[in-house]
Length: 133
Ligand code: HEC
Image (tube, rainbow, N blue to C red; front, side, top):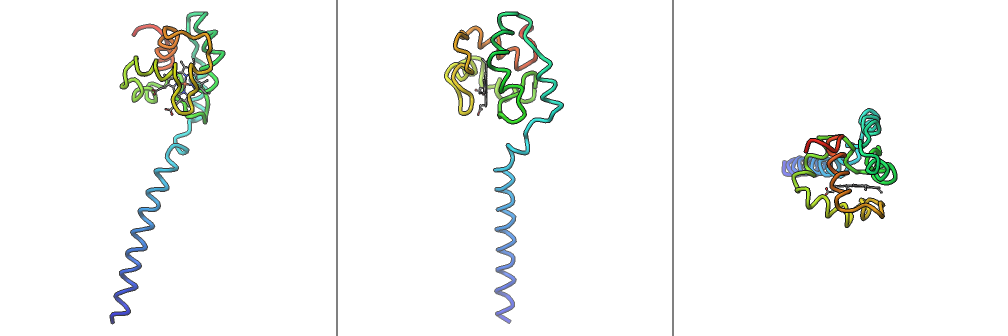
């Protein structure tokens, strides 16, 4: 009798461990599953700043990662991906853009970008246009 109870209890424990393990794996795999779709990337690629000087800076730096399938950067024009970033406040975003943040390199590799450029670029990328804000 007792021999029966133990395995059942162990099986329950094993199932619990498997369940927690699967949940942990899903959390770890989350960012990979969230990779951008081709459609989203095409939308991002179709957007360019109106201002010629800003467009030139954008095309030379930000565009490489912020229209990428896998870079992990919030996509240009994706309101959804930018919303949680914008809640940090524009000052923080400009600071992070200037100093870098994890895989985001300092100044986004745009050596001649000023803080004002960064702010204009962030406004453009977070809504697909640099005006109306
Ligand atoms: C080499 C790739 C790369 C380039 C080039 C790049 N970025 Fe990024 N950017 C990233 C990545 C990756 C993230 C996400 C960082 C994170 O949250 O881990 C990011 C995030 C950001 C954020 C959000 C920061 C925050 O606090 O959430 C801003 C703002 C930003 N980039 C602005 C820019 C601007 C402006 C340019 C062009 C001047 C640029 N980036 C160029 C890779 C890049």
